[in-house]
Image 1: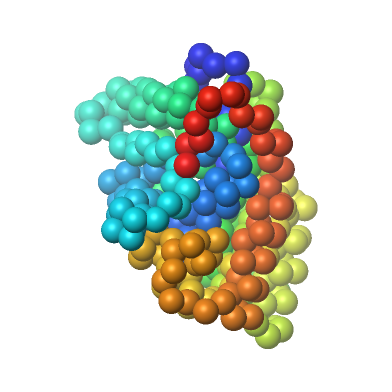
Image 2: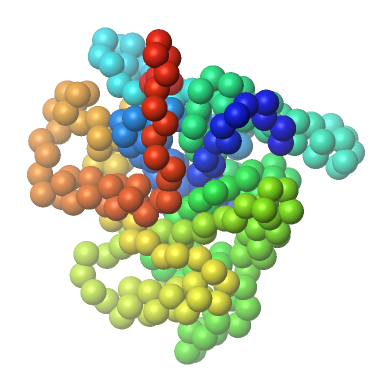
Length: 285
């Protein structure tokens, strides 16, 4: 990608080839949290046909307009897959669409770009992965989702071999290094963690840590199974919006714990410091 700006954006890519892992919920919480922290944030939906992130941000804008309140909203670009016949032509068009969207966001002032990838293996997803400074892969805390990362012996949970997705991340790392000598910080985020300690939870954790050392990622305790995430999601809202949005939700201990989970995620991302705003410059939000 050729971006005609002095500043290079920091890319946070959300990738996972299994649905229902909380990828879109994680995306919107990262976006809003960073906006509230003072970052200029751009957002890209690389699964624009499905449009999960696009729909969430549209719902957020609709809520703001309907309620007449101010909430931070990112600059957003959907990126659609090509419908051209040949593979080479389709990949060239998708590459151009990604580059154009990213360039527009940076020219608009974005210093961080959050890209939500589709839950399937395609060129646009692989290309997006190769730009990650931080790659976040949410998984449900079970061996069903663990299979996306590696094949595991069912008897003793020994790792047999990395999965196709893990191999794809390895290829993305090589592409990133070839392009600009950059490195991808890969974080695997364990979502829907059970509140109580259980054998399966312990086994998943131990096997995940073993795999982390083998193929090079960090592990993070993600979001618990909490109703409030589902309550807010349909309106494009996050836990950081509850007080301003005035949606009639009283912040209890469970909600406070959920906000702490979000803050822990943001703290784990190795972000550059917020750029100082130039006089007269406008925020994205």
